[in-house]
Image (cartoon, rainbow over all chains, first blue to last red; front, side, top):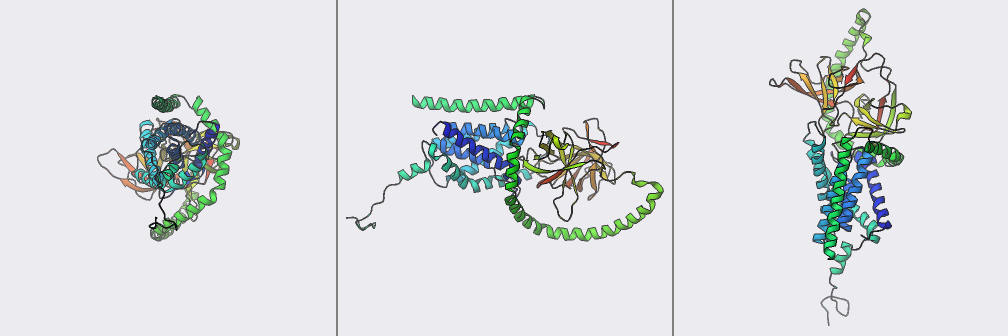
Length: 192
Length: 304
């Protein structure tokens, strides 16, 4: 991602909208005990398209904003989301992924990392009460929901970031495809 | 050369963000409720409250649509269970009406009506929920009423059961942070909350604690093994002052109904499971009890 005011404004707006939607709408929308976690998907999408450094910074900013507005312990979400942003960004840099359906897997894995790591951090910090096994079910549902909505979320984020991206994984894939040979009538198999 | 520069930049970004997160975490834990980060958090919440209120109202129809779909599925499951409960309640109603008639006749003789169930004169303020904590580890909600409406720290909050036919509700939590126009409520399902409670009519007392992750199940801990607690009895705030915490809730606020009582003879205390009256999973409207009833006892609320 090209550093500049445009990039900051786009990512900042994305995070603000994601956090407000998360707190005012999605957190209150229980689906089979779980809920859609938009913030982690937004962070994963930015890291996926822009790389590890923007992913790390976006994760930190998203976590900070989430803790600030949700009243949770400040620093906990930013610590976990920083790691998620860095992890997804490194995956993109090392593997150079370009498959069209990969956002679903990345969204699911990012959500899984987020709910698991956040549970671990919460345990280490201040949860003194007993924990129901239903937490595991809720976490599993949240991961599945994350994977289910990852595709449209990644598409929206890609559209938003496209003007400021240095490399777009989908464009890379398009360039990789070899041109198809065709005959004079435009039909394959009738080459002259 | 370029690669090394990129690697250094990447590592530096990660190190800075992680270090900042840990520093904020440490500072937040180390400071008091009036410290910089707590004050900053309150200020930000107040600044964003109008946006959250607007978003919450604008998106309510979509939320309701999802809720309707979920309720339809739940309703099928609950149908059979409710039929049995109706039959049980019918016979219970007949017994209650007989008992009520007896009580009405005895009232004049012994003056039993000195202690009403729910505390009177609490001046409840109705508020709408505008935001909710996104994880199960922090059960907090934000409401659209604040200090300008008479809401103060540590005031009890009640909510309805969410069932149209059964309008009764119960204790939902307490106010833990207040700004001019809104307040933060920590629910009784939050890991940090414990409520002094009493099982009625047996009188066994204990501390209601949450079972994190399951808002429909609370635990009544520290109930003496000798005091027999039976299922389907009602649990209310006890009004006892305990040595472990300061007093907050007035006596008699309904909390929930006993669903299971573990009678383990090895343990000194019983573990009693309670289903809360308030629907803590789908709260839209709550009431803050802004006044303590004059001369009422209060119940202990403490951190574990």
